Image 1 (cartoon, rainbow, N blue to C red):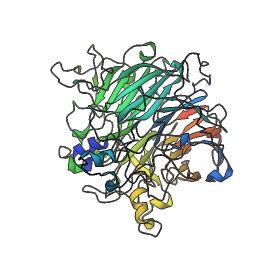
Image 2: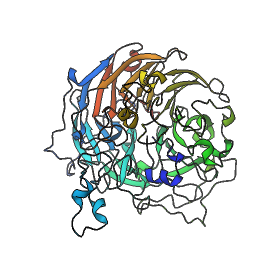
Image 3: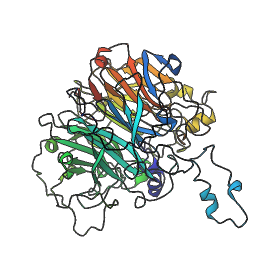
Image 4: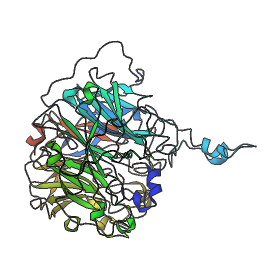
Amino acid sequence: MMRRLFALPFGFFLMFAAFHCSSSSDGSSPPPPTTGADSSADSSADSSHPATDADSSAAGVDLIGHDPLFNRGMNAALAIFGDFMYVGNRTDGSSHCGVGDPRLPPISDAATDGATDAAPEAATEVCPHPHPGVLIVDIKDPAHPAVVGEIGPPDEGNVGITSRELRVWPSKNLLIVMNFRCSSVIHSCPAGTDAMFPFDFTFYDLQDPLHPHLLSKYVPTSAAGRAVKPHEMFLWIDPANPGRALMFITTPTVLVDPAVPNLIVADISAVPSGGAVTPIAEGNWNNRFMGAEVPATYDTNLILHSIGVSVDGSRTYMALEAGHFLVLDTSSVVANATPDATPMTPDATSDATPTTPDATPDATPTTVRSLNDKLLTDPANRPIWGNPAPCMSACPNSHSAIKVPGRQLIVATDEVYGKFTLASFGCPWGWMRLISTADESHPTIVGEYKIPQDELSFCGTAADDPQTEQFASFSSHNPTVTANLAVVTWHSGGLQIVDISDPAQPKQAASFLPTPLTMVANEDPALGGGTGPNKVIMWSFPIIKNGLIYVIDIRNGLYILRYHGPHEDEITNIKFLEGNSTLGDAKN
């Protein structure tokens, strides 16, 4: 989630810090662990929590397994490698107290005679973040998942840095973790700068999946030599060459300078064997939007949040928060064609330097293709929803755009938080739209799906009390899609499984709303808060593995589910599928 941080001064976005946001395709298991490595998980802590019927409120969904992940709260993305899962952390390794944390003492309690100005700040560092690293979960028995390890400091779980996004390239035993500075406002992290808390991609070898081995780090860097902060990523595997993989990385900016990218495409094919990441393309299309040179024209929110990529790689579907949705032609990139424009090479005069000492961009300048002229959808012809700027409610906040396999159709989600984050947020939050790409130059909205809390009729009712308006988010988030079903995490709305066989009339096929844990170490300040009434925060891209759905709730941990309902064969027959890669059973 990054929506409308740009509605405030751009420096406020920097403070918020990139706010928000497998098994092999042939079904093979990873190699067995090797000896001699030490797991960083506390073996004395019991994280198991077998599923029971009391754990959920569901229609058309069976709860197979659950693990609360040490009740740590603030869980982030998941990635699966054979019988193991890796789960990132939305917060960091500090003891910083988030807004509303019940452990936070009153300032007066921290003050003493002769107390310095540092006393109030010291009083906010008394809320430990337990197990802040990337957790390793054994999922061999889906009914009894269990944490068996943790990637901790100095690699993960560091102060001020979140391990927000994860992917696995299973055939190469490669785990990818995207790290960046987390927010002191919405992630309970200490205030700081990107220089203090640097961003990077960290690559691990999973030959021993219980003890991942650090291979290398990469700082996304523009062709002009500017280190640019990532926000989300999509992993594309070349269907014609399984040894070739590209990362499509969103690097959000409101700038209209075409040399400052909103998207970087990087080749990671050499990384598993110890080679470097090679940037091969980048683009920024903000200057194609009328009036974008004045950021307020789009509520200072014209940024590329997330993308989906077709299996053949020829199309990239872009979710631009206040810019809605565009289609980009990336066929020349995935074809590895020679650029037909002037090569974009690092500027030798640039003073931009990577912010992580051991994570440097490629030393040898490489040709980087410009995608600035590859839009298939002119912004003037994009589908538009929500109120225009200056927007005070029901504002557009495009989050994800995932292609429906075998159809000229996109599942697009909007993500909207509560008013704690921004006054224009809150009811009616954000929901899912279906966009036809039959004419890529003029995509059109053909249908939409809401839950009851997304209807205007819900706003202002007794159920929409001030605490709900402040801290709840009945908003769509991340979708994983089959031909006729969209499996979508919906924050306080739980997991929604939507029948999209008729795109004009999408309807609920099933839903799952877990019973929240009684207590967690760290509540999400923005999506529940210390006093917020809604303690369900379904967040991750769902992963379908061997017919079961694996999904992360920020607060309540890992859930493993079985769907039964319309088109259930589309899920039960899947060996592997996730919305943010082309691995496994993904189809064009």
